[in-house]
Length: 147
Picture 1 (cartoon, one colour):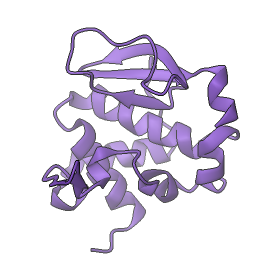
Picture 2 (cartoon, one colour; picture 1 turned 90 degrees about the vertical axis):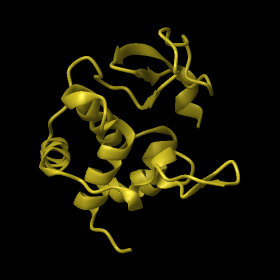
Picture 3 (cartoon, helix red, strand yellow; picture 1 turned 180 degrees about the horizontal axis):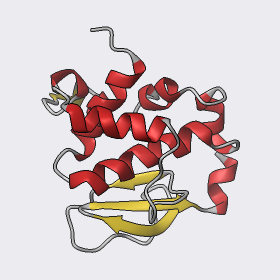
């Protein structure tokens, strides 16, 4: 299924944070745009100067981009999403420069399925910055620059 960047972004927002309310979805969108705009480290090499689609489709970055995880079909993937107006509105907001205050320069997020956010992102290239809903957001550590 060929999806334009806007629709792919809206589907990713819905899939990754659809149950997190507006702030949760804006937080995820902010991380995607931070990755698209950073000028150093791994994401700088991936983003090709601001390519949102390249950021979204980078292998193994977003569970929702994987049709299979752990050898099993992942029904929670972008191809099974049906974005609503709110998902497109948030994608448009982010692409127009909107960023969620409190997520700031975060490059990573995940849901730890716990009330506590670990201090470091699992690969230790991010340190906890803030929590929005069920997602923990992480800003890059100095180790990120060497990725």
